[in-house]
Image (cartoon, rainbow, N blue to C red):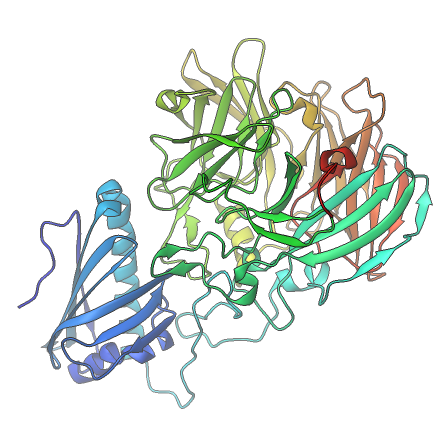
Length: 627
């Protein structure tokens, strides 16, 4: 008789009483091809022959493509299978016993392998959650009265997925369009190029370069299961000495755009990227970014060159929010993973060569989207959102009260990872950092919008198009300030503004240093009050100024560009692309960063999909780069 590996680091055993005949429960459970019709944790399954010992089957669950083999079968009584994926060997035993009140189903599973050794506690929790969900689904379907309609099937929501999220429980699927494919977020259907754009007002001549924005824009007919699964599309606006020369948009042509899966039998394919979160320039390269993958290089005309792995030196994913030190020109970034190593810090020199990589001790599977760089430290943030194998949108993360919120502070330089310190903070989750710096007392000050548990629930449900979602993609997102006293080993924190904002920016010459001014995009609150606008904060006086962009008009992240001969921190311009639903059009809006007055507007040839992040790339940054 085959059993689980009792010596494995992870062993979970659960049972359930199901009010249904054993023969019916057995038939339901061993109908492997039909698992996706009732098990919310399994998205595709195929048995490769008759159900007997030695037969294999392939199934997709929680983003993992698994090939298992039946090793024992006692019809109507017991089934055992085993398989290995991503270095984890699993042995799964199911038994079925008739009882007076129905059928007792017992499941026991063991996991072993190096990844399990490194994170046994986290993986035990994950397996327990997954098996409990399996039993719950089996019980719900076995006890449900028969219905005439056919079961509802949905393929696995991998990065290239083309389907909407599967309904759970007794709900029936609907054809409701998710919010990230409607209104301001409606995808465009093609790639175009337009020249000689109309300008209102006068464009400052120092605005000579490209504003490049990234957005999630699935192909026509594709409905991703999560907002962040939409394929990346970059939009570029070329300005030169007072003229708006062109607009063009291009999909980032990654393998995922053509359907390549992220998870393979060899583990994640880091080139199967949406590449739809951000776009930056460093050392003369344009890079489109998504935090689960390698960056993708683009030409100055936004054509795709291909995945960029820093000459084979980058072996992890790359965050969508790298930080370029304005003093040294170094690019700091990190790779995160729900499996060990959870966090790796990288440094690229000003010439574009990867010169340093180090795993960060003490990190967890918590979602790490952004981080901060000061003159002397690297600052990581771990919130309550962490790896959740029961999440089926294709992005396996969810809120967990058991996941501690923490800030990690690491000295910059060789060997800094050995001295990282983790500080507990209040529950919450932060996607984007405003800035961080050492103050006059040597304390680290960190700021950025955060959400609480309810804010994350409302936001996540918007991102996946689920009921109970917020009106906007960033519900209850308020700016928080942490002051980390390294000498005292303490953290003081507070919400510093009651306006719902996201996408904080600043004059990046002040990145890592104490700054006075910070910018953001404001959103309506849950009751619809507040409206959209570009916000300027004066951190010295506490003043807040808002440039209202108008009804049914949504501005993008406001990118700061210094003015020629700038003396003051806010001598410059804010560039934002405004989506106008009433006119079904978009404009590039140029604001004076000091007073938020309108300087000029460039009329674009189409309404641009509301996006995520972007960058201003001056011409001199791309000198000598092929178009």
